[in-house]
Image 1 (cartoon, one colour):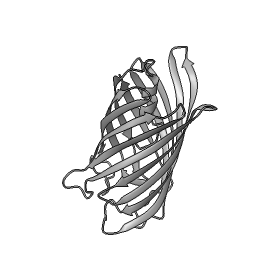
Image 2: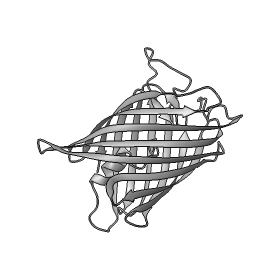
Image 3: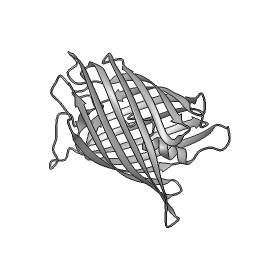
Length: 254
């Protein structure tokens, strides 16, 4: 989903480009389209080649806002592609609230509904989350965050701390801005297996991403990135060890 959910994702970065200068509520929208050759969720490979679509609406100010959105992942299951039992269509709907309590600390809370096709091997589930985001005054481009999740259907708890850092390269020919978004995360999961829910499991996972981002028009952004993800101590044998994949994205922010 992309909430993935890492605090400095590309969506968060694009919304920050249009920072509000007044303390009045405003409505903003971000739409994005992505192609990736893997979809890895919390250290587990869910699909190979896939298309992703997302739309997010924010209403409020920079320090206090409500948001809602949908995110969809559609695997490319054409005949010439590798197809696995995890190549499944996934839809997420979410709603949340973001609030800053100081210049350096903010909280994010919300609810996610995971929806799958009726004939899917994975059942629908619902999840609550709460996150704390820390900005360091000494290093403004650095963000630290920790999120906690509870999935009702799977009776699962997940803790995921992460770190994100943005390197600003300035502009190309004084026209095109360019920056590099770096992030890394580590997670702990305990709950029912998302497919074989007759048993519980405990495992940890980690990953990192590097996305090169540019703005090609007032409201249009492009990015390409490389990602790494792995998990440890999974019980059902569906491991994602030393897995690397790439993605390309176009986003429209208004």
